[in-house]
Length: 276
Image (cartoon, rainbow, N blue to C red):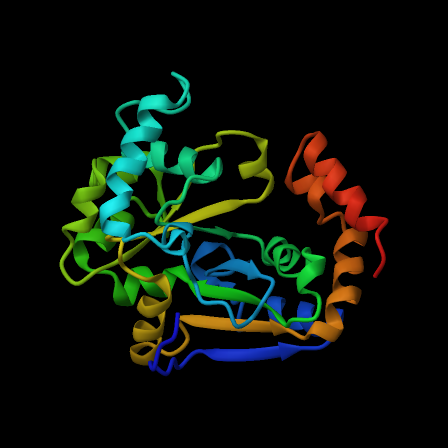
């Protein structure tokens, strides 16, 4: 998705495992939380991608059809044909989360609270080993406190939360159209329901724009120009992927753990015993 917008985010390039750990765990990324008993907790969520040149693009955007036109029939047909009990019938957000989880093109993007899980997704695909990978880091605390309109941020503050869960999101915006009506556009991060062990294992977070045709990539480029520090990109040099991949395996960050079940086990073994 070409764009002429010039983002103001910081970009750090790492060339080995030690550099990655420093970039992901330094005080800029994990400051001490003085108001929370002195814990070291990051305000960022993370998304790993195999190619640093790829934009933040949803599966609905990649489908190629006009998102505004195809999202309603996609979700309507998913609700119609999905096995009963797959999601709460009265929750648009749970239905959307289950649809995303099972491969339906949606307006959602996947993120993780764990930077090393994001590093896994930036280094797991061998066919992209010749490309630099990237970990997108978004400060969701700054997003809530400085950027989101009150209609979106006030319920989070009242709940003493930084991101939504499905219950709070359903109470605040019962239907997708309620979020889409927010003036000026917004990006909402929320914890999906624990549909299965995969979501729990990946410390998963989802994001949604306030409209199926709105772009995460454009949104964060525009907001980063106004609020430097909102987004931080950590680029993993192609030459470092093999070492970082082995270190992640050594630390048990792999398909076997992130995709519980036989398919994840087989994916891990296929990659682990393949050539470097």
